[in-house]
Length: 229
Image (cartoon, rainbow, N blue to C red):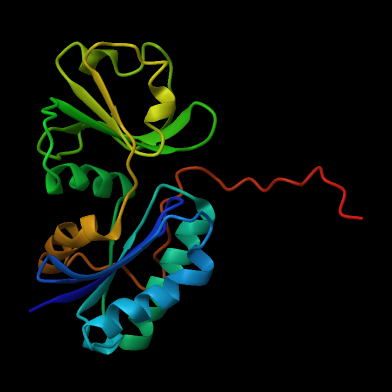
């Protein structure tokens, strides 16, 4: 029986869950933005306390590896690495876009797309994205893409395409194809459960010392234009 801690901090929604053999038994979610630094560790304690376990009772910790928010990913990965090191358990990771696609298979829906294209908002008309088949297989590399009227035209010509994520709705007015479906969604820890279990069973453990989030783009710091004094 495998207990795996699941940590997802890559977007504005923070979530932590505990899975037992791929099924979620405890979960915490916060939809208030920028709460990763203050709530990730408390959420970990709460999901463990709910089932009377400690981190040392877990078999692994799994973190969303990105792409996504630079700060959010740093918090999630740092927390996961600290837990893994302290408890002496392996570290697993799953891609943020994979988690979004997994959410399609965990929810009942009338949508039957030929392709699924998850989109993480990267500001303006840019998104982190990749193309997946209806059964969840990734068909293209993960990339930062500026969305225009002709984006993904080759897939839209073949059938229904579901665009989902926190970057999907802003593309609705740009991609006007009748085969385009749009759904706002956020990667959530509970949707990591089966992906984490599979990685655990296959022994796909990360190097605890050298693992880093998949940022995709370099972090660019900005200077506030507001006068502080």
